[in-house]
Length: 325
Image (cartoon, rainbow, N blue to C red; front, top):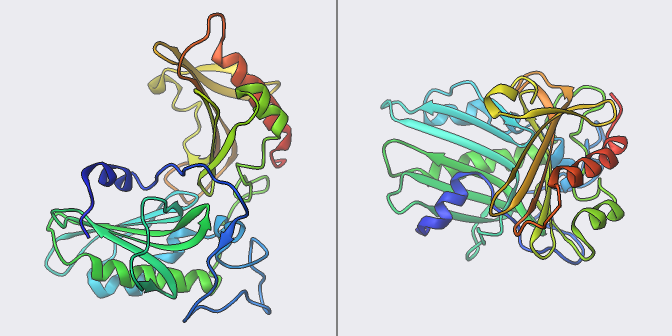
């Protein structure tokens, strides 16, 4: 099916915001071709269903881009780990055209609904492509509340014929998850297992953005809190140390009770503050550190309010809840 232009931009960014989430979480059960959780051998890193959020947080996404499977379509490049749940392999087919695979684990799938009986690896799957057929998107749905899954995005400089290889790579990835392939290698104190929607306590959220805020998990490692014109976002990511990016990003160092962070504020039509700091080193990715990002936005600034004072209070409440390094 063709995708509208606005949706394309969202999909190409490898993520979309989830709408309000309420009620119990629902994990898609293992269907045809899928085994249940392993009962012998090495336990699942998350301690449960291989397709649960806890288990998927530990999955190495580059381990899901199987080189033997990619070699069916040409010459694989080196897979590059770009974030906890994000890996890419930009390769070429035998004719020399680009085949740019990007795999996202725990991708928000709200904009991609399964149609008909399409399943990949036993999971209900949504498939779409750009109007000019220069990219194909497939998401194998792993949860329905919140709605998210494992996504393959395949783009090329030569349009056409992209959904078939994307399906085969996605099927291999689903089976790799089922078979509990080696997880991400992380250091002591890693943020990888944290659920960003439960790490902050309700009192901290209420103080920052008011009573009655909603929690929206926009990825396995990102949570957005919203409440009547004010928003807070917590993100655990792999990136470069914010101190190393300070000059280019035009940020200012601040002390969060012994933790050095980088801060940037802006008060114009809205009031916004961003805080970020490196929590622990990470090796083997495009970035060098596991980074905590906090973002506060009030869409109609209030007289006398400093958004960074509010955000610093959130950060100081968060820091003791993070794993010790």
